[in-house]
Amino acid sequence: MFCWFLLTHFHQGAADFSWAIRAAKYLLAGKNPYDTPLEQYPMTAALFGLPFVWMRPEVAAGAFYGISSALLAFGLTRYGYHRLLVFLAYPYWAGILTAQWSPLIVASAFFPLLLPVTMVKPQIGLPVALTHLTRRGVIGCVVVVLLSLVVMPRWPFLWFGQLGYYEHFIPLLVLPGPLLALALWRYRDRDAIFLLLAAIMPERWFFDAFILWLIPKSRREILATAFFSYGAGIWRWYHTPHSFTEVGRWTVVFIYLPMLGVVLWRGLAKRNKPVILPTAAESDSLGRGNLAGTSNP
Image 1 (cartoon, rainbow, N blue to C red):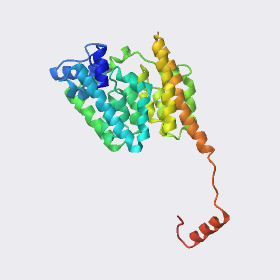
Image 2 (cartoon, helix red, strand yellow):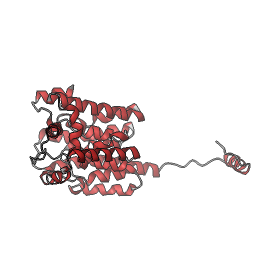
Image 3 (cartoon, rainbow, N blue to C red):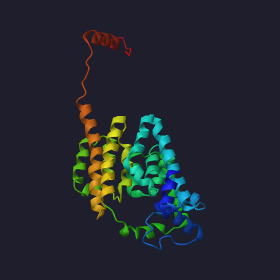
Image 4 (cartoon, rainbow, N blue to C red):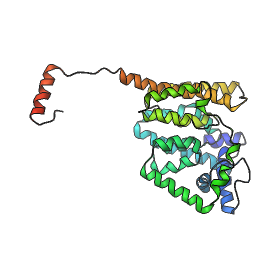
């Protein structure tokens, strides 16, 4: 409802979701949706836009963002209600203004059958897909790709021709982005690999970084990263960016670097965790248990 209210108040129609609806309508009409350089979504987005083509634009976008948020909330609560605090992050609220895909892409990490959503916006979906692969998820992706090729066989070539118009920044290449390479110190940690994968992908705005809230797990980690993320929001409120590089710099400073801090802090905490050795009596008891061929709880 709030998404619908914002889109109506600012006269944005379906905002960014309008491109999926437009592609779906063109698909139904047998037209080429890539007749404009502004259509930069793959044909998989049109398949997800089909259920919404009959709605008014603001209602369609509001319903889409609401369903995406509900699925994400349901997935998060599997691991404790404190995980719902990710909705406090600034990128989520930046996304609600334009009905973005990032909440649904984050939700796909919890539901294998949603993994095909990562192909709608591959630049932010790929890190999620590669770090949350399952057999059912891969099968779902293959089915969606085959279905899209059936309805429009030439779409991959048409879509690739549009990519040159995509304005973006790459977090790792925007100062102080190279610092993110420090995540390699924790290369055995899936969250560290996820952070690096996200850092090498092209992004456009703050809402794309919402996928990073798959990294913090504890209440303290989530609240800390959400708090720092509003540095980007405050900067945006008082400053009109002159380039996407400028957007990228503050995305790195206020969103990526705090996530790097979470990943590195976990490594230090684990390394400095004291090892509690058994007492002499416990050691003797354990030894007798092993000799007797029994396990000691």
